[in-house]
Length: 265
Length: 265
Image: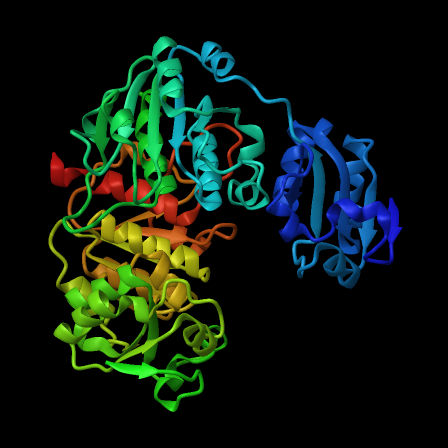
C-alpha cells in the first residue's frame, strides 16, 4: 500500500475534484464510493478495479481485502489529505477508480432471459437517485436486468451507484437509445409489457404474471409517453384518494414485489 | 403583497439562513418549501401559515392563491434577493413560515382509528429522507397515522416535508418517547403488531390483514430492537438471495400496499 501525504500527488490525480468531474466523462471509468459498494465490487467484479484510495483507518481490514482480490494499487491518506484530494469532506473514506464493463446489448440480455424473467425498463429517468433506487429494488426482487432508454441517467454515476447500494454494478443493464426500439426488442423477445402509471387500466393486484414480463416506468411528473402507453397493458397501483403518485423507484419496488410473487407460490 | 429589495430587510428575518437554522428549533414554527407543499397547506391547513416568501415570478398565481386562503403576509423578491435571504440558491422560489400544529397524543390517534386502520410506526428512524419517504408512502396507501418513537427525526424538518411531498403535514402523527410505551399503547388499542425485518418469521405475502394493524419499522442497519421484535409478529419481505435489505421507506411502501389490499378485495 502506498502512503499519500499531499493532495496534489500525481499518483492520485484520478481521485481529485470528484464532484466537478462527476459531471463529465471519465474516459470509460467511474468512481465507486463507500465500503458497501467496494465490498460488492471485490466479491463480484474485482477485475474492474483500477486503483483504490482509502482513509488510513481502513488500512487493516479493507486495504488487505483489496490486495487479496486485485493487483490494483491501494493508496492511503490521512483524513485531511483525503478531503483535499476529493475536494469535499470524504466521511466514508473509501474511493475506487474502476473501468466500466463492456456494454451489453439489450438483445443479448433479453435473449438469455429465463422463461419467467422480469425486467425493469425506465424511460426518461434522468434523476440519479431514482436510477440508483430502481437498481437497488430490481436487485432486491430478482429482476433479470434493467433496460434504459437514452434519456435515462447513467447508472455508473457516483450517486446512482451509492443509492443503489452497489446494485447498479451487479444487476445487468443495457441502454437502447430510442424508446420504441426498446419496446420492439421486448416484444420480439416475447415479453408481456406492463406500463406502470397512476392512470393505468388494471390494478396491479389483478395482474397474474406468467411468462416473461417487462415493467415499464416513466419519470415522476411526465410519466410514460403516449407512444409507450399505447403499446402496453397499463397498470396502476391502488392508492388513497387524493394522492398523486409514489416515487418512481418506490412504485417499482411495489410492482416488482408483486411480480416476483409467483416464485414463492 | 409586499416587495422586498434587500436581503437584510427585517420583515423577512424569519426566512434568513435557512439551512443553519434548520439545525435548531424555530420556536414552534417550521419552514415549508416548494409549490407542491405550499399548495397542500393552502388546501388543508392554511391556518398554520404565518408568512410566505415568493420569487416574483410566482406573484400572479401562487401569490393570489395564498391571499385568497390566508391573512398571512406575502413577500415578493427577485431571485438574487431571495438567494441572499435564504443563504443558498432557492430555485423553487417558494418558502412559507408556518406554526406547528398542536401535538396530538398517540392515545387520541389510536382511539379514533377505524376498525380496519393501518398505522405505520417508526423506531429510531433519524434520517430525514426516510422520515419523509415514510410519510409519503403512508399517505399513498391510506394509513390512519404515523407513530414515532423519541429517537426519530422531526417530520417538520424542511427536507422531511419536501421528500414527503407534503404528507408530513397532512398525515396525522404522534411521538411516544419510549419504544415500549408505544408498543403498549398499540396493544391496549387492540392493534395487531407486525414487525418488519429481513429476519422475520412469516413472509409478508402470508399475512392476511384483519382488524387494526400496526406496521413496525426500524432504521436500516440496526433494525428493530430485540425488545420490540419479541413483542410482535415478525414479518419479512421475500427478496432475492444475497440481497441485504430494502430502503426502509421502500419496505414500508411494499408492506403498506399489501396491507391496504383488503380495501379493494
